[in-house]
Image 1 (cartoon, rainbow, N blue to C red):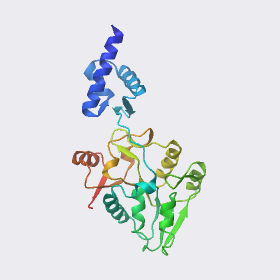
Image 2 (spheres, rainbow, N blue to C red):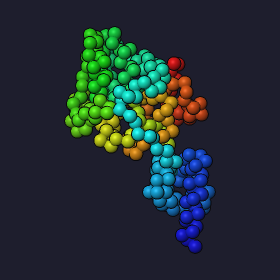
Image 3 (cartoon, helix red, strand yellow):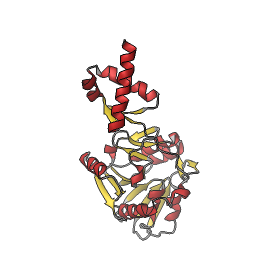
Length: 258
């Protein structure tokens, strides 16, 4: 009888996750009257089947992010939202500061609002960010070394990570592949994950720029919890209930008007 009971319980766990999109070990333990160790085994089994993804304290429904086209092809996607986000994010950068700006399409829309700044230092691992600021007289641009990820025009890997030890910044501004309240910030390109983790640790202030399409999906590699974000800049199409939950989690959320 043990095996059918286990299989039935795991099926019910999956049904609960499909309804609520997330489950917690503590709640499932109470609901089924079994130990948390047993629930963790169930979640591990469901994760191995690809039905769920483990998250801190429980699991989330596996909603895979579709493959991303190269960065140059994505520049036109959700353009008006990204332009609004870029303008709002640039407003968080003051003259005289030193900031790290990461790769991606949304971060690229910040650049045009920085070209007239004074005494600004921008450190980046994104070639499109660097070239966008190349003629800005008041901006000093520092480019990390590293292996080029051609599709993203980004520099990642050991050499990039070593160079990050040599610089200090006031703020970090990153785009993100996917964001989930339960599963955190995730990426689907494993060689970039360690680089992103090191970038995040460069400064206490982390500004993440992400349009509404980035939320509610989970990629294969975990980067950091959502709570690590200091300020999130997104657009008006973000789901209102998600916006409320993000703010309840302690994040400062700026909704950029297109």
